[in-house]
Length: 381
Image (cartoon, rainbow, N blue to C red):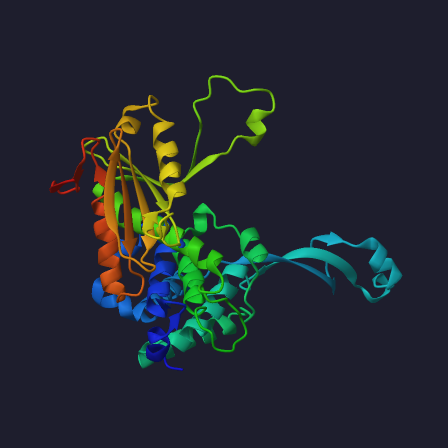
């Protein structure tokens, strides 16, 4: 299947193109701030080509500066001592009579986990590339890695975890991030293959986590250059004045998905992402906002009052995919604004990106009910 046809496919209700976009913002590239330097709206529909081109350029740079080498453990019969001699094996095999010893040693090699990841990623992403010249370039680079002794077996997560990137080889960081993303781009398909991935319509957990990480990465990419503070996955504590002996162990913990600090007005926005419908059926059959969401955000904000001035002006924002309903509504409760907004994942990728940007840029809400954007526009609620 061509890359163009695969990009037009859907998994559940979501076009594969938009899953690619979510993966891009959820990737390590978002944490490095690299996305904003190369992604434009007209490039969104060709994400595999863009990522493949960036990966190829990164690998080219590493070749010019020499690929990072590593060490692997070896045990072998040798004619001169290397590393440590295994005396028991040497004596058992009577190697000394032949002028040999059995040694255990570390050997310098190009066949490191990160280089294996890059080679297999180049081969994998080549299946999605439209540009024939780029396709040949990726295959050529993969062949060059093979000639350097890099095997074509994808490393495990444990292998990569052991292959830590140090200060002297920090140039590999973006290359590895691009290689991991290239693998992710190749995953969304329901066609038979060597790897399986449940469709989001049948398995919500994977895409829910992807959506949460992507919104965080998007906020980091779009708002940090505007001097906003962006934090993800933070714990906030109850202001407890007394607790019985066993209560601490069973008291529910509060964990925020994303916290934004607007730089100019001292505004804090607590964001919670939900990959579920924002509405439920009420007692009389009408649609109402899910009460537990409102209670959750109310507890997050009011429980932190008095800790610092930002919490006094804090507001809440729920971001949902548009499931059965499109919504963007705000309520101010006891001086704190809480907004429920949906973004449509079924829209073209560029439109979805603009919609999410507008939701985040409109998220700085004063406690007096005036919503402000970083450029100074106001909308009275």
